Length: 458
View 1 (spheres, one colour):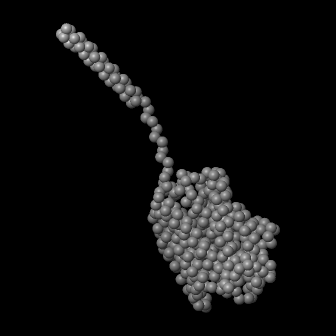
View 2 (view 1 turned 180 degrees about the vertical axis):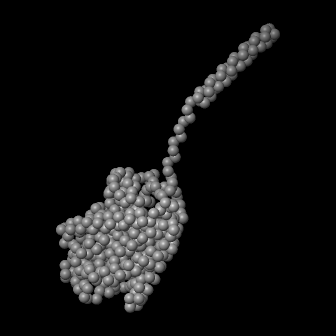
């Protein structure tokens, strides 16, 4: 009995062994077939990884954005405010602050879309009203294969729009209604600033496709604001008593403080325009030092040669002239070229303020055109020269100076005409709706009291 059970167990064991061997062979055959099929099948296409913003560049651009805000409040507000008479100090600062705030609101509603798309033609763009196409995941391209967060890019560009509109107020100080300013600014931004920013800085833009060089806003910011200020000054007319009555700055101390803040903030303005914390940003930084320093000294030298004493106002004016001139050339010039450009622009701006303005009889209250407009033109055209590698610039071996200078001149002319015509339209609309200029009595009392019911000093 026991033998029979053992024999039966042995037969069952043999059968189980055979079945197991067969199953193993079958599994190996299936595996071999699957391997062969996988080898014969085309390899799957890997999805491209989404671009990720470089944290270092993002941090630098956030810093640059805040530096440009420093240029507006308190920099420009103190610079312009100190140059006015004391009865208009507060109104000047308030107009600058409110203009910047209004520009920021307009920028996020339709300005960014009008300047940078994503859809567009040679003159303006569309497709991102109310920032509907922007999120925390969206990015903006830099000038290499890097990207930064789009919210950071649009914030940086927003401060440019804000300060450009505020710069115009230097030509209209002490006589333009606050209500007129608030009407003029959004119209002007829409028909002047946003299209010019698109034409110069956006792919597909008219002057961008020409190859015009404008690193940080010689045409977009300074020529634009300077020419617009001149046109608006003509629309407003002269201040009561100008030029026969003395109208000296009430506080050159505050103007000097504002100048320093502007110079500090300008490093964000210029070096930030590289959109990366790299060697070109470093080049823009050193150029912003040397062009400005040379221009400040040049203005005081010319004052002395013209028979005057070198003044604090001259120093401040020279600083701004140098900063303006180097703006389009900041990353497009070597340091020696930037130094010469600052000197030349400062000298020409001095004669525009001291000689051209009296000769033509316009009342550009705080010399927005004389410094920003004139030095901006010199800088924009001069960028076509200092870009040459023979002069230490970053141009390539195929750089042709004459051709580039002609492109720069064309870009300057288009900017001048567009700004002038657009400002006339915006100014006439504001005049129709608000009257544009304060009454003679309000101007006599000062805009601090008449427009805001406050005094800067009590």
